[in-house]
Image (cartoon, rainbow over all chains, first blue to last red; front, top):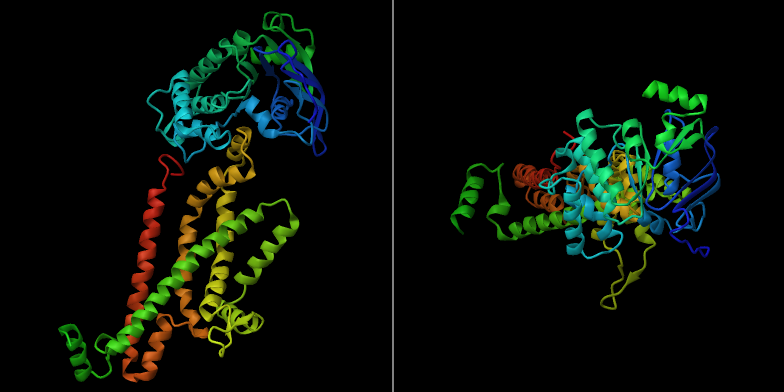
Amino acid sequence: MSIHNWEASQPIISINDVHKSFGALEVLKGVSLDVMKGEVICVIGPSGSGKSTLIRCINALNDIDSGSIKVEGREVNDPDLDKLALRKKVGMVFQQYNLFPHKTALENIMMAPVKVLKQPKDEVEKRARTLIKRVNLEGKEDGYPGELSGGQQQRVAIARSLAMNPDVMLFDEVTAALDPETVKEVLVAIKNLAQDGMTCILVTHEMGFAREIADHIYFTDRGVIVEHGPPSSFFTDAKDPRTKEFLSQIL
Amino acid sequence: MNSFQQFFFDLNEKYPKWNFIFFYDPTQTDRVLSGLWMTIQLAVVCVILSVVIGLIGAWLQGSHSRFLRSIVQGYIQFFRNTPPLIQLLFFYFALGQFTPTYSPDGWLEVPIISNVGWAIISLSFFAGAFNVEIFRAGIEAVPESTQEAAEALGMNRLQIYLYVVLPLAFRVSLPALNNNLVNLVKTTTQALAIAVPELLYQMVSIYNDYSTAQNASMTVLFVVYIILVGILVIAMNRWEKANRIPGYGN
């Protein structure tokens, strides 16, 4: 692995001219963006525009064909990549929660720190209980995922990811599968996280939420970033016709 | 002679076709008990080994190496598509010729793997072939997305297999595994063909020696296997219930 001296003044994530194809379909056609520590980034855009693929590439769930993704100065697009080191830094929450159905909420949160990081169990349990409180799930510690609502499961998933003490959190359309009445509780959990200074990258369709918490909004379409800017100007002064059309449909 | 033995002794006097000789002749009792013990040992060892073979086979089937995958596939095809009786005979008589021997007393040459050893190997591989397929079906039922979440938490392939895929796959596999293990317990009787002194072997020997004991032997055989398989099924069902996940899959 190459020597890297990353400093907090540099982008925590630096994506440069990334290309990615699935077979003949080119999903990312040269995407570049930088994220600073503590920033909250929202990526919006029509379905199939490559936004989910983009964030999946950041923690190497998908590999890329060309270009560069650096997380805290380390190149992700590297055959010798230490995936464990990367995934300790980058947490991810999925659309379908993907909890471990045979484990209780508490066990879901504890599993990776105990099994992967080999941290002492009682210490991890203490942290897990704090995290449960942090996502407002007190009393649900011993519930199995199948006994929890979608919104509760998604908050367990957030806590599970936080238990690894990541520096960056990726959210892949985390409210898209939820009942409307439970969307809010998940958004509140994410908002609290963002306010505590966690670097977050969200792929989302919740425009109101994006507007409220994002420092920067990126609009993707057909594999490229069409337009980006702070929410104050992005929603009102969109320049590109594609952005305008998308926003007119969704707002 | 105690009253139990006396009862069957008298029964034989009255109805000579129902000679439960092993219930009043201590020598025959010992033969039946030693046969039963052998059957139980054979069943327990083969059940455990076949499950281990199934788990390893299913793990190798998910390997990146095409070579390993085709070896597992070849193994399954061979053991699933040929009769277990022929496998037993093949292992003992054909392969048995090529295994080294040793001499415990300086006179007799004894093969390193006994007929019991070959029965265990052959029956475990036979049932193991089915178990690989059973576990594979269970593994395929575990959503890719659940494994992906484990991967995103930094788990490697082995950790994902041990802590996420197996526990879930196992629950899905239990009913099918149940059936296969019941079959395995019954198939241990075929070890008779290579003279493993299990229950059927002992019973057949007894009614060869005392032809009037035939009906009695058959009856006891049925009853014993109903009980043995019954115990296995009850244990497996309990296990299945104990492993049920609240709110999952129903």
